[in-house]
Amino acid sequence: MGKADVTDKEKIFRDSIGQKATVQREKHEGETATMPNQHLIDLGLEVQRVPEFKLEHYRYLGSAAVHVFQSAVLGQIDIVSQAGPLVTFGCPEDLAAKAAEDLIREMKERYGKRTGKLRSGF
Image (cartoon, rainbow, N blue to C red):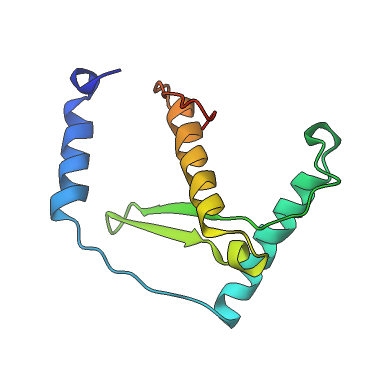
């Protein structure tokens, strides 16, 4: 799929996000982030226990997530990103970045986009 396959609606969305959006960033750490981060950690540890993944002898290095919300009333989109568990469990930054790239590749595939493959497998 090339740029010619982009619909007018998608073009308008990309334009409004890229040029017209008002971005407000907030950091929530400490007590506010404790429960959501614990749920994310629990999810990662639960994945490790699935026999088909064969991860029982691996050391868990953390998890990251992105949650997307849309308010139909306000016409507003909120994105909540979690990366704290990666730092908590000592995942090296370079490895976390490669994991994020792999997530983007997986998302593109889920939406029917083709992805290139590097010699390394990433």
